[in-house]
Image (tube, rainbow, N blue to C red):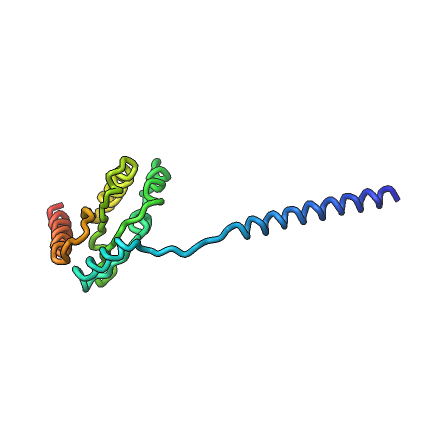
Length: 167
């Protein structure tokens, strides 16, 4: 009888413990809420429209994760190199009709003057240069004419192509 009572008590405690765990999991799941956010800021939308108008036959994507464009090469420092690119994104990526990357574009507003942001920018510069992907940095201005954007894009792509031939 004592054995049966002891087993009943243990079963009761196990059921309470299982219920507590399940309740905690439900509470944690309920706490994970997400809100939609726009892919581009209003300023980035204006730049997207201008870039698309400047190169209408190209595909333009905004806010592309850097690790979708480059990957860390295998080696001793693989994880360190991977960690430098994982949390970063590129403002715009211009692709040709075959969906090959022609150019990456960063719009440098005043936030790029901060020391931490400059360090992040340098990591992007190094990764893209190492992967031989051209990067065009354009200082953010309120009204850069579309023709000027087109000129800078064409020059950046042409310069990269010339460098490819000379290498």
